[in-house]
Image (cartoon, one colour):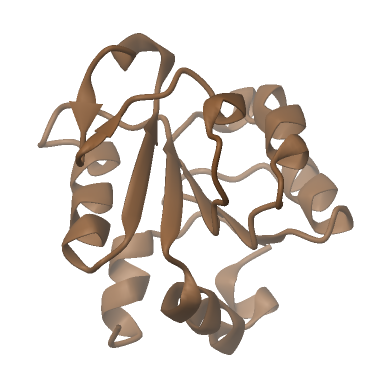
Length: 142
């Protein structure tokens, strides 16, 4: 599912109304997209919840790093994913268990898993695959 298929207007509406983004696979390395993309979002007013088992105990973007999505105890509008496509199914149960469910799951540039996306869509969660949230945020003029 590409951005164009779900509709640019729909994605823009989610980005305009979203306040909280969980970043699955966040990095502490400022040179990696999994760090500078969420940092950009923080600089544009989003609350970022970092999720990465290997970084638990650290603080990024003013938030304690969570070990999994299941640890998040607040509503999340977008789950932004920086994980390899083949491991995405291991996160499906946690995403579907989120209450309320996120409006959108965003698979960053280079990440695509159609079977994973189909299951999310069937559960009523919009999906963007193989796109950069930072680049699209900028191109939409947000």
